[in-house]
Image (cartoon, rainbow, N blue to C red; front, side, top):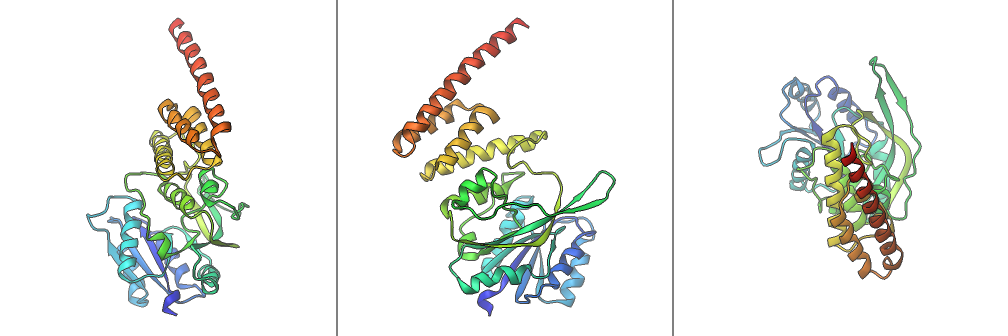
Length: 316
């Protein structure tokens, strides 16, 4: 059964007041063939003390302090965890965070499809949200969303598939081909999963059950709309990175073209990138006629109205 051991990569930083509940939820799993690698991003609270008591009681837990080879932040912590997992010849990877809770059957429900079909890239489940209001009261929600999609990359990029980082259990042969971008301060999982989704647009299994509870901290910027400048800047950077990745690997689809046209026209105006999209579509017979006209018209209209706005500004 070692072939079906799940390696849990638990990232932590200053969550001594919450991590014990997370660790207990892992210990309560009905599927017992797991190991949990806890990677600490140099906590300054009692996190190491809380973790040490669990390690003493259960040898399946292990603790590592992140080395200087990885940048501060969640991306570096997860990358270090992946590298540690490789040294242990891990087969299946479950990312988890230090303030979230596994439902007792999460690992069991999601490893079963791998036993039936070891070639799957990942399995994924639904999640509950635990939202804290201004008064400190907690509210649990079970949002309904569709996890079944024909093209994973399109669904993640456009927000139709909100793939929370804690939902999937990954086949190590797939996830080990990727690393989280340590230059990104936010939404690093959206950027990575979009890349992965376009390279591997299907071959995953949905477990239509709510199998973990995710604490919502209102830091999401996946589709924009955030007023925090750093997050908005990161959102723009990610869109450019995704554009470059899809262009260089010739992976664009009609959905990605539409999404990026909107991004470079409305979210932030990048005429040079729109021109590159135009050139890409020109070389792709499936995209050329419809999208080249769309891009050309959109750029012309935008250029016209920008001139009007500049003139109006000069009169003020």
